[in-house]
Image (cartoon, rainbow, N blue to C red):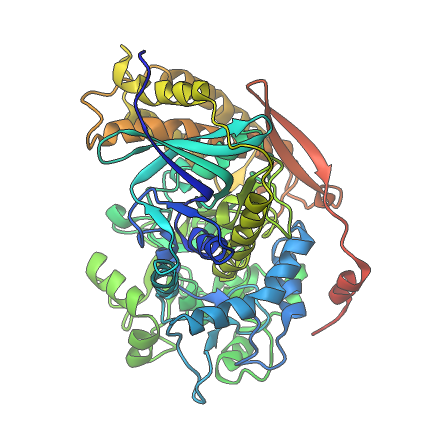
Length: 600
């Protein structure tokens, strides 16, 4: 192939991904005086963060004065089954209140208490009501606020640009290669530091709440550049998504419905979650319906309703009810808020949910229950980063948000994702800018790497194969849905890995018709490489971890093993092959350990 023409842009810091983490990173890097390029796979403001509904978790203490960062830290660690990076969980709990108040200063319009403070709602796994919210559209308000603030900071924004490979100068990163989605032209970014903020991997599964952008780009870019990934076996299946009609299956039903009084029921009308309270949570969970009902009307007792157990517990309970024949007509269960709350309250507190069910399913949630069920929602695993700086194991490469691992351990608590984005997005932007300021030597980009990336990009348009990228993607999603879902076992995981090998060979034969301009088939073909990479990482890690913990359940290893609770499963790419190892968690200091002996 002849030398490929391309345009080039140069910055101190480039941020790949323009959701909550990417926007906050870009804002902070610009505040440090760095030249910043913000790259969006979609349009600015269309990031998947807008789909986050229920709220942003922070121990402001506005509803419960007893709340503080120590309790939030403890809740986060316990929700993550103690597999979290303790330092990340500590920083998150300590800094989340400041980040929420910062959003308010920048113009975010949170719902208010009667005396004018930011209102906070209950969510699963949180001892106190601590989710600041804007009805059930919190992510949208957060993106609006960050975007409006960010566009005044001198940040260069590159929209509808898909990054396909990171560039390296020796051991350190020095930029990236991508293409413009509108016309397929190659674009090169030269940069002293790179922040990955690309979100999750959900499009590797058949039923997911994730948007089309979530093809594991940041995870795979980091892995291919030599960085470590951790915790890829821990995939969260959020317990409540729409299950009917099929055209909208997987659309999120916010945990805020349960936080505001909604209850889960089977087809016998039973509140089945009382049958699934694990020993770990019994001390803080109401153990009968009467107590739970009183909790909603008189919150002076702090005990939780079992409908608000952590997401992994609720998803498994729903799956068990459906398998036992107690599910709803379309393979889910019922979520009922109309019995407990008046219509005006529901329309005010949950406007998006009211319109979503009314318009898409013909269901009036002020009069009848919703049908809901689990779907892939989040990945706890990601790029291994330093807690304080978000630096990966590759110099100059940083990661924040869902594509970074460690913060959430084996399971993420609802609401912690949005505060994670702004806490570690800020830290990523700060330390990327500091790295760029201290960058030694000349910024050198190897043209051979650019040419190699360009050849890979154009190959599906030029080869003579006959495979269809949509068919391969559908086969991948079905395999992951069936074999690497909520419940796993060794035989299924080995079968999944065998199927992935076949799919990888088929992907090498993908042929796309047409040119580079507005060609969605070509975009899908290019996404396959990262989708197949993250799917393999998830399956390999799930096969390695021989226990059940958080978002990873093995029915051939149904117990939680203390020895496995001391290690991360670490993945690296060496000489083109995926390597897996077990490495110890960082040791928690004694003062933080003492928090788990207290009853707060």
